[in-house]
Image: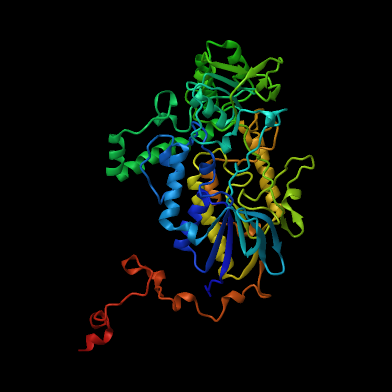
Amino acid sequence: MGTKRRIKVVLMGAGASTLNFLKKAEEQLDQVDITVYEKNRDIGGTWLENRYPGCACDIPSVNYQFSWKIKLWSHYYSYSPEIWRYLKDIEEENDFISKYIKLRHQIEHVEWDDEVGVWRFKVRDLETGKVSDDEAEFFINAGGVLNSWKWPTIPGLHDFKGKLMHSANYEEGYNLEGKKVAVIGAGSSGVQIVASIQKKVDTLYHWVRSPIWITAGFAQTWAGTDGANFEYSEEQRKFLQENPKKYLEYRKQIENELNQRFKFIIKGSEEANQAREFSYQEMARKLASKPRLADKIIPKNFNPGCRRPTPAPGYLEALVAPNSHIFTDAIGSITPTGFTDSTGTHHDVDVIICATGFDTSWLPKFPFVAHGTDLRDLWSDGKGGSDVTSYLSIGIPTFPNHFTFCGPYGPLGHGSFMPLIEKWTAYMFAVIEKAQVERIKALTPKMTISRQFRQHADLFLQRTAWTSPCRSWFKQGKIDGQAAIYPGSRLHFLELLKRPRYEDYEIEYLDDNCFAWLGNGFETREFDGRDITNYLGLLDAKDEQPDYDKELINVLAGWTLDK
């Protein structure tokens, strides 16, 4: 008993989640082979892809890092290149690419083989075009939520002869000085771009078609004036380096503030009312010179938190700047030299930047099939959109041996992903090790359980700002879309995933007798060098068979009293 059968795990994507998985797997897993397929030229996921002007994380840097890899950061809210460098350092220090990661490889088909109990993959080498086969007992989606960017559907967009870029595929370092630039999209990327480039460009054109709360980023108490980002001084960095205990306290105090934010998501709470009043006063003050614009974009029927807050200091100031032209009506069309506005007036521009987001339908881009059902059909609403039901965000009902790092109904707007990544990883390890030891062929989340979880979530979410009438990627970019976000606080989620609820799974064994794994009557501890009396406590805190004091018997044995 305790013998672990050898299994394989395939992960899709090589961002932060996979790096944590690999690091912890080397420390904690045994008899597990791992392959990672990554479509990009390097690791890093969203922090490799997103390099638009002003791209920064909305979580304070000191809390956007793993508990096992603490760094001295340059800014309070770190910019994309520094976050990517942090992740790349982890990869290089551990040599993960040569050991596990196949870059420029894209999964094109995944199907569960019920007879054997493995996922079968077809994977394309994007350099050669060659398609190869692979198989694994477990398949983990670590591709992230925002990984499939999309162009807006605007007439004439690709007829434009100037420079056309998407925020998620931005030409890093492109010079915008003195140019006429149009920024389409007022989501998290759009507001950061506008705030970053307004003072550099000759003329800025920008559209804010839906009301939007512009608030400071997470944990603004510790930020700069008005919630602004700031660069740490040498003295501050030196203090953190020389005082690791104080660094931990600093992180904990910021995290303490992050964990209070869920209260203002609850409709009608005192915290929600205070957040609305504070945000209204800030926006009204900064947009005072353009009252018509203020009236159009300050929300009237939903509170802050309906969309994820984004740190964009300077955005509101950019909207009222002399070189800015802000539209609140839809763009007319794109022409080879610029665009027409809603009145038909033409404007020449040199550059168009589309900050128009991602496909957030949750539907995979390839056939993903279990028991004859493609996930794209299981989660389709029949109208070209999605209608998703997950198991606690980490699993998919009726899909065996599969996990997702933050799937539907996960904590998408709850603060730093890093502690959550560590919790998801620990959960996955527990299930993988159980399958190894107990000779389990398949663990499949039950549909009935998953539907009950969704029913609870959908009912609870009616109490929150997330279901208010705003456009949000939490709701697939729709005002009235399905709010597939976790129905509780971060602490609530971390407690829920503390250990797997195996009663929520259908379990199928490799053997006819589910107790075959009890084996020959011995436990592996009796032969592998671990302490066989560990239940009494460990000597020197080491779980290994002690080198016992051979003289102790001469002191405490009963026969010594007969001498």
